[in-house]
Amino acid sequence: MGHNSQIAGEHLRQLIERIERLEEEKAGIGADIREVYAEAKGHGFDPKIMRKIIAIRKKDAADVEEENMLIDVYKAALGMIPGFEEICDEAENAAKNKASKKQKAS
Image (cartoon, rainbow, N blue to C red; front, side):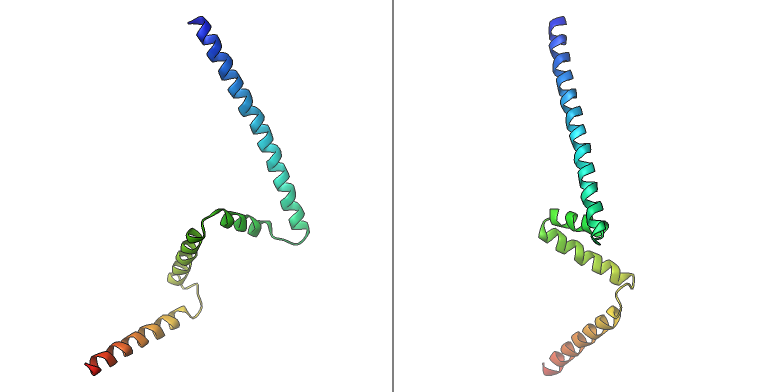
């Protein structure tokens, strides 16, 4: 058991050290990314918007479209889209008129 525990301990130490090196690289990459955002800000770009664009680009196009539609639905429900209620009323009236014309024609 002593020999196996030495081997397991050595393997574990190697794994831990690999993770530590990767964490150091990750921290360095994070610093590089922050520098690029700072550079972008210096050129007049908004880093917050850039982060959102990067997040969108990571997603599937269909997922982005569905998310945008849901955002619009929620905004409409909260009255955050000017004129939306009027558009809905017009669409509802048009549908009612079409239905009544079909009934009269029958």
